[in-house]
Image 1 (tube, one colour):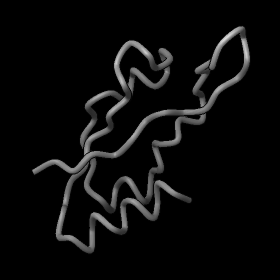
Image 2 (cartoon, rainbow, N blue to C red; image 1 turned 60 degrees about the vertical axis):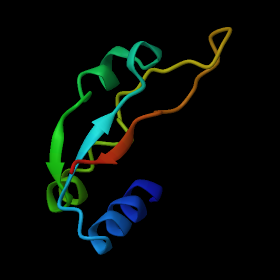
Image 3 (cartoon, rainbow, N blue to C red; image 1 turned 90 degrees about the vertical axis):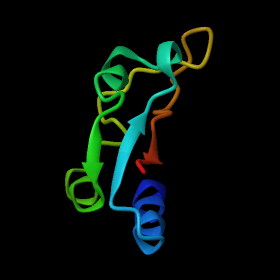
Amino acid sequence: MSAKIELMAYQQKGIERVFVFTGGDASCSECQKLSGRVYTIDEALREKPIPCKACSHQLHEGREGWCMCQYMPQH
């Protein structure tokens, strides 16, 4: 839900495209596949690429984490 709200806020500011920022090497291999991908706001709202459903990020000591991907505005 937070990703949807973030996209809608970008849309209200007149931003038309976003890219996926993954945090680089700290992200899992599935999230890295999304790194730098560009979406229109409408595409991102429709496809919902993040949070990555296949994310396997771990916090520490094998404890399950969560997707850290973010949308960033593309100017």
